[in-house]
Length: 242
Image 1 (cartoon, one colour):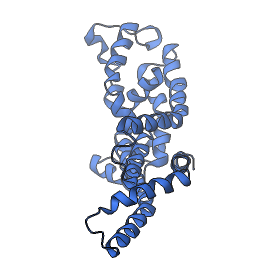
Image 2: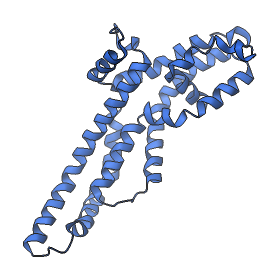
Image 3: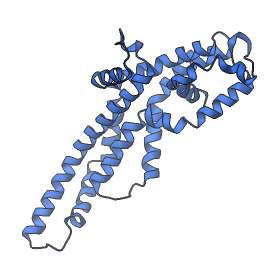
Image 4: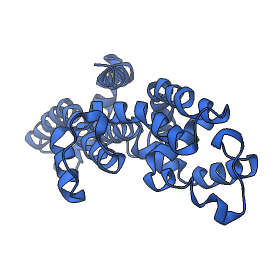
């Protein structure tokens, strides 16, 4: 939980400047510049409200859930699997990928702050480095340039110097593009089945019979025979390690 809280803290630039106004709240910092226990509780409870947005935006959850929804539409199974099942699967797959990054953030940022070796600002900067490296791996250069222009920020010397306010939206755009590309590829074999079935039914004069009623069992059968869930999930996971 602490690692996830630090992930959100690093992702919200406004929180990085929160070390100074603590005196306005009448709460003092601990030894070595660390926060007192009451202040830590307040920050953690506040950041928990941002947890869903952080999980959906700055983790592989975004690409995975988009692809899974495309897959369900391609199969034509309407609400099977349900949204809860797809979101749960996407969440646990995303946790598998993001766990090393969250662990690095915890060890580089939270632990030194707890031990009094870093101030809050230093801990946020140190904890943000693994997140910044992860996002920079998947953010397209074109999307980064777009948000640099929107933010009117100078071009960084290296990806490690990118600001999170530029890197996070660029990552989201890149993941949406990747998810739609994979979804379009998934649609193609099922589209071929739909076209073949529609041609057969029309040539047979079965105009009143919706082709999807005939093609749906064939699409599900094909998906099961090729072990589709294993192929799709395996390809998705490998796309983050390539």
